[in-house]
Structures are given as structure tokens and as C-alpha cells.
Image 1 (cartoon, rainbow, N blue to C red):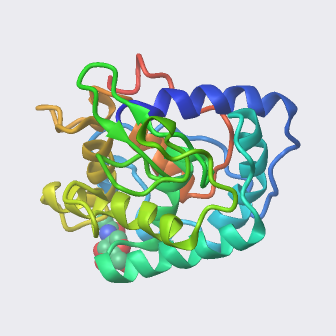
Image 2: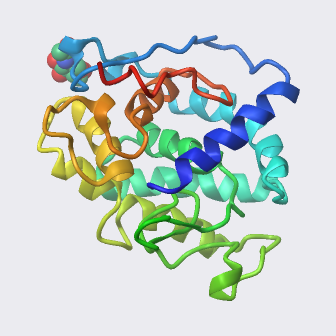
Length: 241
Ligand SMILES: *[C@@H]1O[C@H](CO)[C@@H](O)[C@H](O)[C@H]1NC(C)=O
């Protein structure tokens, strides 16, 4: 949520210098999406999104380097298997598209199961776990809460970090923010992403004017299209124009 995004993006921009080019089943270049998140305004429909497996396969090789850069032990294959199943289960239990949950995990934590809890600078909220959710209970690395970096990260924590962020075990997760968007077309996901990151919809309805990271919804849309990279080329100062 709010406090993490700069952290992940900052981390990612360094990783990019040393990582090989991503796998390229789609080789998607970044497109800055502007406006209200609707197909009419040029945002991708669900039928345009990459498959779950493509999004997984292009991002998982990047995850290990991202975790290392963050000073974290990279995920094991066993942890990744649990995370993938947890995302699919949470999708089925929430009614959200599994690809959307996966894109949010990539955006929030680079898929590192041992991601640290972040704290919002102004309000002091805790944002733990794979989805850096609002005050969830699950984490595999929160020294201030008495949880050292856990290797391995127990299955119950991995599942819990996903259900916390999706809103199945918390009350302000992706499920709730997507519902709060009030939309039923694909824009519900892009609006829900803005609400997850920024808390409130800008009065204009322009998703490039989110108060936390104005590029957040555009980044999510690009990840859903199969774009993978470390730093977003989206310009925070013009995305809302
Ligand atoms: C988007 O895709 C959905 C599901 O396939 C479809 O019902 C809807 O008409 C599409 N929207 C637009 C604007 O093309």
C-alpha cells in the first residue's frame, strides 16, 4: 500500500542494471495509460491481459534478484509453489481475477515472501507482507513485531499474506477496494488499484492523479499486459495530465 511503492520501485531501478533482459513470450513495452481506467479511454480489457502463467513466468525469474537487492533471502521453489496456489485460491474465494492479484503482488513486493513490513511515514500504518496490506497479521519478516526473517517462510504465513492483502482476512484489501470502485467493467480493477494504493479516488476520476503513486494503476495495467521491468518509465508528473 501507500508506503511501499517507492521502496519497491527504487529497489527495482537498481536491479535493472544488473539483470538480464526478461524472458520474452510477449516482450511488452511500457505504455502509459491515462484517464479513468475504461476501455473507452484506451485501458486494456481483461481479454487483452496476458495469461496468469505468462505473468508468473516473466516475473518470477526477476524476483530472486529483487529479494537479494533488498537484503532478503530469495524465495525457494517450494515457497513459490505455495504462493502461486494461494493467489489462485484467493482469487476463487474473492471473485477477483487471479492475474490482478498476481500483478499487485509483483508491484508491492517483487514477490519476495520475506519482504519487510513498511510503515506509512505520516500515519504510522503497518503494511506487512507480499501485498504490503493494511495492518495484516501475516509476515515472514517484521523485526519490530517480533518476527525475524523466517527461512523458510511457513505456508500459513504465505497464504495469510495473500488473504490479508486480498481482504479475506482483513477488511480493507483488494476485494474491498475493487468493490468500492463501484464499477463493473474492467476499470474496477484499475480503480481498485488506485484505492488500494492511495485510499481515496481523486475527484476528477483521473487515475493518474492518485495521491500516493499516480503511476500505480498504469503500472498494474502494464503488468497485466505482461510487461516486466524493474523501474517504471511512467512519469509521475505528467501521467495525470
Ligand atoms: C471487455 O471484455 C468483457 C468480457 O469479455 C466484455 O463483456 C466487454 O464488452 C468488453 N468491453 C469492451 C468495452 O469492449
